[in-house]
Length: 421
Image (cartoon, rainbow, N blue to C red):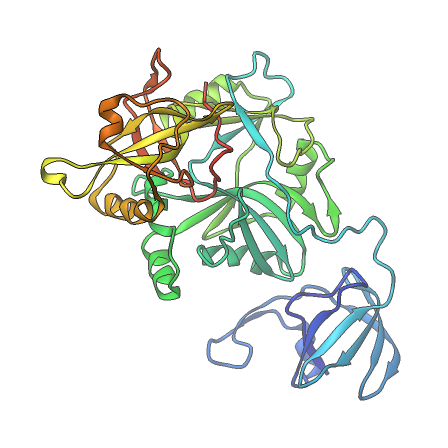
């Protein structure tokens, strides 16, 4: 008799798993590995996850108790039918020592903006990827992806399911970045915008073909029922690299150790990439905290901003979006830091206007005053949309000089932005 376990064997005795009763299988199927042609029963790739012996304790129409003796699957389990055709499987033994169920959420650790360490000893360097931070919760071969602000990205990026297929029954929490690669092979944040704000399954599938994304994994926080938050960076990296996570739409990020950070930054700059992240090799993972154990060093300046309003376009852009009014939160509220009118194509202008018009308010959301001329031309909005700009420098009056729009930050909430030094 055979059962399919979509979420794998339960390790926690408090959580039963679905067991789908399938047709009986010939015993020799237990030794088969390989590919079954599409269209045939069980079509696809077959691999052996575990094998071994079992002791039978009870066998009735309503209860089957066994003790499994595999290399991976061990312990006493009971299978029992539910209403309809499905069954459930329950672990009767206590959970293994030190077992921890997969947390529902872990806040990502954050980096501070700064410069390279003065001494490379004890530091590792990773490429800073220009994408959307995402935490992947993998259990029973299924993937749940959450952004930094807890938005569910799973339907938006179906490519991420492939990681669950590779990990199979191994539960894990991965930390990484969703990136879209441009024609030159470099991360393109603007191209990633085409994959956001979609609701139709057909449109998501079409855009996934036209603008595929990759998930670059740089940390593992929970694996096989064990939390790794209190493990140092080097140990977490060893666990991550042992998983051999690589596929058509995902890869394990490189970690450069025992090297000069200046050399890595120079190579990244030559390749036209955003920068590097320096990480202390003995640092633990601190969920939700922004501290000096991780430092981001950029090759060009970017700033997360909150949209507080817009100006109408002029001339050939009459009736369209002219510029966005930008703010950065501080102790006084939302401080006005200037406006941006470049970096948009026409579809982006239309899309932004569609999002901004329902948010219109009469009163300025900025804590600092605009000039009378700016105030007269402004359409103010409730400040909830976060975006990102590239800029040349901060001016003496704390405005952005020569900002260029990069796109909306779906993964950020208004209020958490900080002024980049």
